[in-house]
Image (cartoon, rainbow, N blue to C red; front, side, top):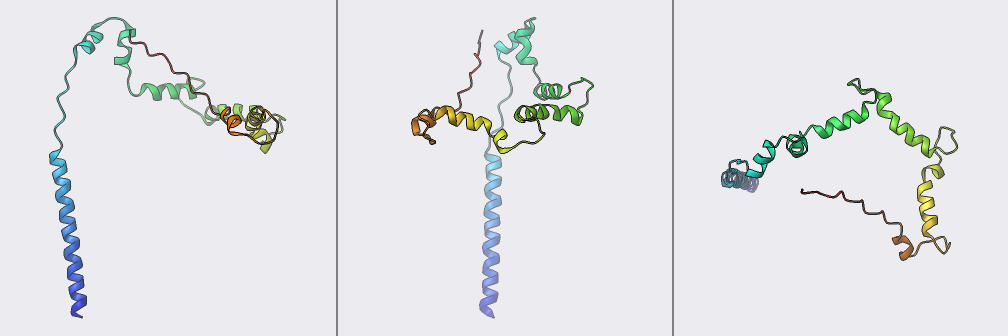
Length: 152
């Protein structure tokens, strides 16, 4: 019985010691982080803000909501400020109609996988029914064209 009590006391002591170490380290880490430096506007930003052209001010005036507003505007087809389920599902209906080649309202596996089948057929140059490493390398997606970044 004494062993059981001694084991429980030892477990409690170890647990409380661990908690104390954990809280002291997190408190030290919180106090050790330096305060952020004060925000100072640099001269180029001040000069750009003072220019009257919209092109120069556009990056400064862009709000973080602008991306979400553009996304909302794309979905709101009738520009009434609300998105109905019909507006939301219309692009999906069009994509489904493109895949449904026989027009029966259902997608067979062949209709769904037609892009993969044609990509495989065009990559299999020797018509062997399998792809070599060189043939498979031709199926890699093309790298997207990067937009030119103008610093003028």
